[in-house]
Image (cartoon, one colour):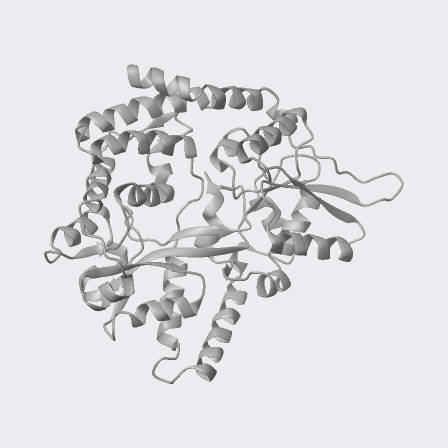
Length: 425
């Protein structure tokens, strides 16, 4: 009971904000747009905590190219992110919030539960130029919940685990149990992944499968389940493994058996594969019940507020999904469109063939392997940061040996149950 009381006190500020949002959510996000009687452009507000330079450039180009729509930027978090979020929420409550929302720095799960964000699937399905099949399937679904799509990411990066195929096996079989078995059988003095601690692994896996443990429709959670206990046990092992100063050298010497790979282009993937000195490699991703998957980090994710300007807002979102933006403005990331992704790979292979020795050049094998990683990625980005705060705080007590596994999962279960019940809408 003490832990629950402490949680409620710590969350008082958040609960007040949530209550305010709940009161007037039905009037939220009407925006300041609307066709003017004098024929002036419809003004759409793009709300962001911090404006990305590429997005800024595109908005300028979009405004110059369109006479009927104009995008106005409202940047909330330049000086202080917390204050920016409070101002953002206050404007939504008053009914003059943005029409378009940058999803990068907000708790998307909260705004979905409050009915702030519009479902994009009907807009895509009604469009004559775009279809769901235009995009990489798993990446399109990053912001999907209960069959509704609440946001879309024009670009993305991946985080995955690469290692020898003989050691890691089939990605489809890469589960918590499989990963723990590999770690339990490591040679003495070796490490599985360098510089990945217990909390780091726990956050990555939960970020991809929070919906497996929280059912908002039923106002229920299952953090006292066996799968979550197994995940905590796996994560706990990570802090016991040795750490090495140089990843590349440690991999070459066989002291680190897998590479934690951040990949945003084909060249990065190929360079990582070369670290294993000709051995057959595989990317298994992070362990989930259905098998391994890369963790996806979205680039310029955007949602549309419910309200009268949804169709006009879709026209801007659609511009981010067109060939011009996808092929000229998605830099240091992969594009969401399948045809644009193929063109990006073809250009990478052509550059490599011109500038690198034949034996080091990017090959079709690298291309095919990365396609497999991208097309098998299916992790969600609907992640409740407040639940993570509860889980991480209590999990540390288990990792540090201060509480038993059963004690920790029961505390987490009780605390999240209270949170879910009080925030169920």
